[in-house]
Length: 302
Image 1 (tube, rainbow, N blue to C red):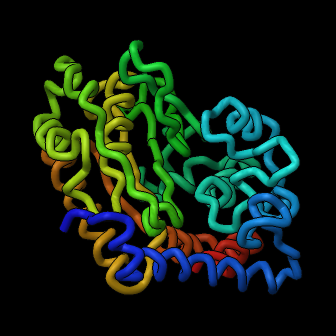
Image 2 (cartoon, rainbow, N blue to C red; image 1 turned 180 degrees about the horizontal axis):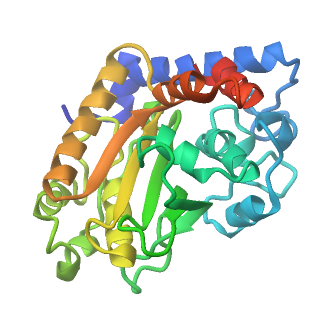
């Protein structure tokens, strides 16, 4: 079922329940750590931001990771008197950093790639983790979309990169996701090997009347940019999302399966995984070796 207006969804209460589920869990985590929260304007807005960025992270940002976010177009780090977006308890970028940055510090990008199902355990291909990567689709578009995380493989590997789009509370908010701008459909040369995704793109342009919770246009743009950079079938794209209880969780999963069907029929190496599945899998696989990290993720996100 396509999403209706945000007003209708608010009246039904479905989006509020999903977002509130996430916020309530994060607020309980903050209370357990005696973190005095502030609003988006410090003394205004709902208090669900940490006073400092470090309080919202497992470990402080590494210099190269911080530089990546400063180069990005999302304004995650703020810089003024008000907290940055990454200081929100429900920030998807903070969640992404908490999961992936640790593996830079231990110089083991292969283990997290394998935990995400992107390669086999013990693979020698993954070499480097990058945040906020940008892959332009066409030089006429000024601002390419940001990919949350990319695990780059060694030179000569058949799969050049593992790209990861991270979602936390976004799908369950009241703001509707945008459709695909018609200008992308005018780029005939980018659709040659992905006819099913082009058919889907037509159906969500300019308004998305297909997906209820999934931002399908964003995923299509990522695939177009990655294809331009690496070539068809030379990358993997993982949709890493946070599951919630009830109708929204069912609807989100249904959207993901719909998108995955179109992508895989075109030969795009696309799959999806929930954060809960990822963290529990890591706890089983290497909880003892990385105990503090795994315990933090389990306490906060599972």
